[in-house]
Image (tube, rainbow over all chains, first blue to last red; front, side, top):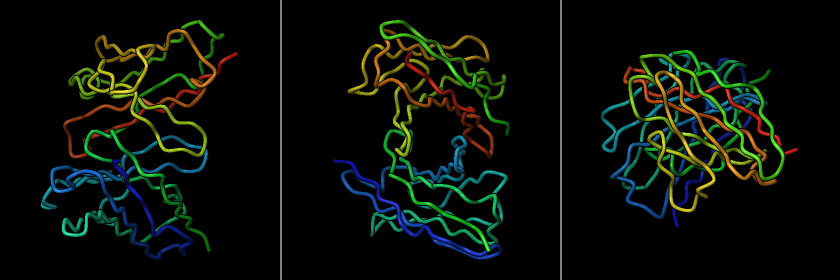
Length: 114
Length: 111
């Protein structure tokens, strides 16, 4: 059974940092690109970032470029999102998803507030 | 990259059909046959319903169908059932450094 489980969300101060993790199982992690997608409370889905299978190619939405860093540890079947210089506009549920968005995690809530 | 445009809401009675549009540009929806549709119930993760414009993943009922004409993609839900009441989002590949864009979302209500 394919599973993606996010963690690391919580409350952060404006200007602060958080690191999200997504542990996967049930498929060969090293064969797949991975994404992060976010959803602000009551709002729609927004693509955030993606990374290729070996971690050497990454893309970011303009809204997070220069502040967020996507990475992966293929030995630990884990995807990461390092979020720096957080603002209130980054408050959202963050989902990890597989290459074609065919499998998603349950999401982890990030709240940025003083 | 601007979000794809969807109507905010759509509705139908049980057994009827509802069609949701997703309008993009010649750089995204119109350029690639990589349009997907997702169903999201409150508090849940999105679920892939249609990929590559009209293909259904295993387990998705054939009541769900997708199509595309020019810069607009569409999702049709036939034979509406109570469990189809949810938010629906489209998504398209863009081929740019922001490679994916989602739609604004449509809330489907089963009357």
